[in-house]
Image (cartoon, rainbow, N blue to C red; front, side, top):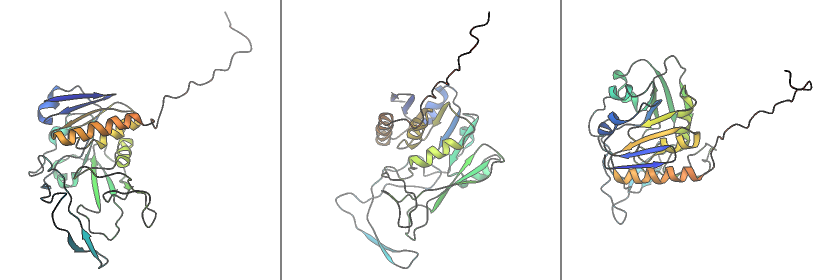
Length: 254
């Protein structure tokens, strides 16, 4: 590992998680969105050039797609093996697990419904996450995620309201919901494939400790910035006020 940043209760490592993980203390949960063979490559378009293209939407109308520039995702050119992740903590939540479900033990599933709008997306209309807690009912989270989503959609769907900074980035609200599905109320969460830091931001907002690892220096810097910004915002949950104590009318009894 070449760099370590400590921001509040978050420890962030720039490096390969295979090198970093053996040196970490025990954590309470692993929550991550690993590369799993999607072969996400950097777009060859650049901000000053490239060509727009036209695609046909499901409603038959034409849509102009402008080029995007994202750095490639390290390790996404080969199948993912989840076994090592399952040994890191008593609880795990792994996005994209439908791609390697045959290599996972019995658990439960979460579904992110991205709210179909008729627009052709560069990713699916929904995604699935596996959790290590068995026999739980399937849970679904509905959140429109379409690049820069601000306010409410045309049909009043809730939107993410943030910019997409990473090809496989998850909205902060989604990751907060994920942490709330874990059978733990506090502790330390680890994301070995931190990306742009959404899991870390969610951990900060909910009062969890966080350990994040990212191999790409540019995405690592983005994650550090977002987590620093999260600490500058008011916490969603604060320490509970002490309960008032009713004084005894009889006074102290010897």
